[in-house]
Amino acid sequence: MRHRLLLVLLSTSMLGGCASWFETSSRPLPTALSEIHSSQKLQKKWSNSVGAQNNGSFLPVYDRGDIIVADGDGVVRTFNADSGRLNSKIEVKRPLSSGVAVSDNLLFLGSQDGSLLAVERATGKVRWEQRLTSLTLEAPSVGGQVVVVRTNDDRVTGFSVSDGKQLWSVPHFMPQLTVRNTGSLTPVASEVTIVGLSGGKLQVLAQSTGNALWESVVATPKGATEMERITDVSSRPVFNNGQVCAVAYQGRVACFDAKSGNLEWARDVSSSRGLAVDGNNVYVSAEDDSVWAFDRLTGRNVWKQDALKYRSLSGPAMLGRFVLVVDAQGIAHLLSNEDGSIIGRAKIGTEGQTGQPVSLGSSALIQGPEGRLVMLSLG
Image 1 (cartoon, rainbow, N blue to C red):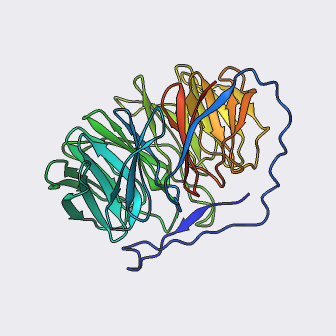
Image 2: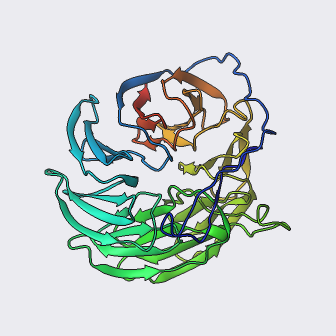
Image 3: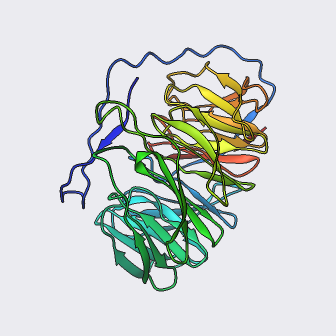
């Protein structure tokens, strides 16, 4: 199995982190696709170029009828969500390390030189700038009047949206080896931010103070070597209907009571790609690219789909009532939420492993690493 890992070295070359990727040649060949009986059409609503996304952390954001996306060169593009027409382009003139967050008329961006930028949406003018303790590889997170940033040294910091004043900062222990993390912050209204952490932990922070309301364990590190003990929550936790669910690499998928943090159930599945939920199930793309569904209340395995193994799948996203995943050959697969059967398929023109699709109800946004943004909908 091929592992995509980040070796964190205590150096100053990347403001506290230096990345190295480790890959083995033992990963099996991608499973060949079999013909399916397509009962649900997929339609590529529109497609546009957004600039190269070289590390998977530049995911698009939907805001009030617009799709906003940044690239590593410091260009922020805004597209009409219905037509895909380019509405505006802002050149920040600073290389960026991560994607964009939006709050009313401000855009928040992490720069390659280790700063958080608040940029006016209409003019591109930098409203304020704050120096960070390290590089950020995931987009900021906005809840109410607080913008939250997680940096490469595992520190989570909250800043005032209006003027950039630092409100609080919470450090965390960082193991020597971690999975590359391009998104592990989930805001819940203006109340809390859920944080997936290295070492298999999950923490809920009050947005106004940074105080930890609770901390629980998704998975415990195991094994004799540092490589075997990597157990990180390196994808975004999900909050839904009083429940928080998360998945850890070389660990488990687990769901907790949102108020108390008490564990409701956990099952052994390794993933660094994220999960999706609906009213009944939790869906996970595992590291071997099998797709699992677990009952939200009990953790019972509802189904498992193995027909896409080793195809380098994205994390799952809900498209209507169905489950959407995209493989590295740019093929979108639609799975039944009831039994996991593949009921739709479409070539969408992305190449390489994509980030987790962004669900917009009956549509979904998919962004490929080569810079192709696609709006996919049910046909």
